[in-house]
Image 1 (tube, rainbow, N blue to C red):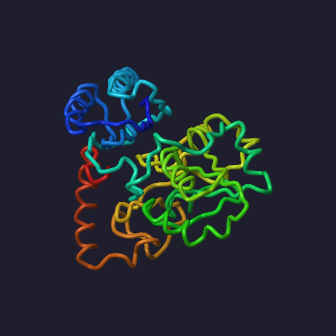
Image 2: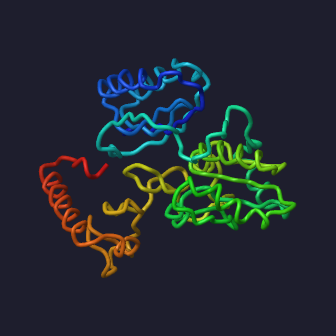
Image 3: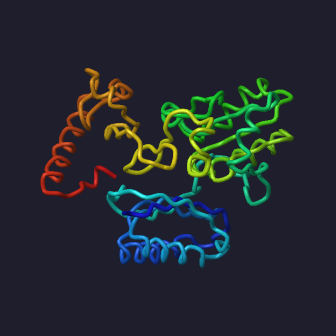
Length: 301
């Protein structure tokens, strides 16, 4: 079994580039794959590997400046869900495009998974899903508002256009692991919203801790690794990935005339021209050859 660790932590790194090499070296030595993002505001990512290697990597990260209290969420998979290890330098560890946002200054009220159901059932609470549209498309909480944003960067503009809908409401927000809500709750507080809440640990923690019989979650939770989706108990779900657009694919999508493996799906069939499709077909050919050799092609993530 592979241990999968999802993590993020906001802290101030004065020289993120100096942290990149040691993280890569340790990860490769421990057989770890996945993705870590470094920025001056902190670290974010999901990694997978042997349990001992993941433990050593987490110990290394917690020894970085300001990361002693880093929390992570663990799940498990029978197969390695990543093709390689990437440690990237970014301007933000989750991109909102709002330079004045500072989750270290203040955020909304954290709500434990066991208390979430009662909060979102209250009549004066509006529940907002802060994830991207393709993530919301395969699952969300009952009654949650879908902003239909293609990226988190679009959220501030959506709020500005829709804030009148939430007059005199308490706002409860959620995302996959909690990181987007750190920024979105800080943003709403800065916009004058007085009572803002967010799900501590995100959907992943809720699905891990809340029994399915008591759950208000409907569908699957999209994850950014080879599992594509997880359900209650963080069990891998039935979705795969369209390698042309990276959106989730249900089995029914594969019966559509718009579906060609690695080339197009019903969601992206009109987004690419013939030159793109020719390139995708060549990539898919190389993926098939790699699979035949018992290898994983880098194009699979």
